[in-house]
Length: 396
Image (cartoon, rainbow, N blue to C red; front, side, top):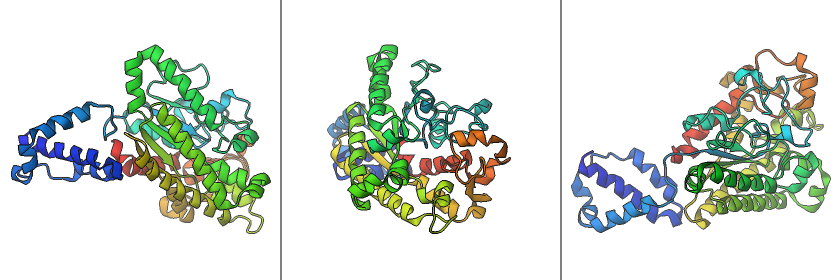
């Protein structure tokens, strides 16, 4: 590499480090890809005359700081949008370890994913050169060595609000974080402390949670509507989300994605329950989901300013991509956005999908939703692709 190309690259890293406290680091990191690295040396006189600065930059880059580059593992917290089988091993009735779930997964195995195949976290894992799927933490199928490149602690039915997890018997966020702490210790025993710490520091942490808090707990469990206005409940949830991220940060998380929730008022089950306008999206649900997503995005910015050495990104694609496809399915090559593929598609999910397996559609690629709540693998692939192009580009 010509000498002037090296100097240009160094300048980019200096800018990133100096502007981190002002939340400009994500934007400036993109310059590594967009600048012409063949600019003449005379445009960089300060670098030519201040070699001490370059030595200092090299020292900073050797520290355990976050920058665009390798992701060692995908570590996941959340609800059924990212549960890869943990509910198989708890008391929750919300399970998906039976047909027709998983019929398009590798080998046609129903792993416990609430879809016909892989989830968006699985596709993200593959895109980073990691395994094609992110395994669940619970159960005895995977040794810790196999969990070193990815693990999901998520649980279908879970929420930020403990009431959500209690009502569905799901694994609450607090327990998911305890499992992560336990996982860290197992990783140290297996890999050694140095390698384990490196894996933890370079991993990408994905939070995908809040769907059940908004779509179920607030609107269908009346106690929260008595206690909070819609705006107050969102503020309450965002406080819990912030606490969860800070807890993960204290345990070593430095690359973090906060994922917006689905347009919950447009999932088939909520269309069915919309008694005022049967069959149509429940816009009251959607408005609260949009408010939650907006405040979650603000939280990401806030955390970037508060936590040293962290990069928190916000990914809206579960909302924006799914909303766009639901609004005009034919334009995106889908035929049905109103019903799920399994059963009648109006209300069935989990056990009800299993009971009505003979009614399951033949071609789930034509459907936005596999059951009455959860997207199909095809949707998750589109969502993952868009996240990788936008929010996660900084880590590629």
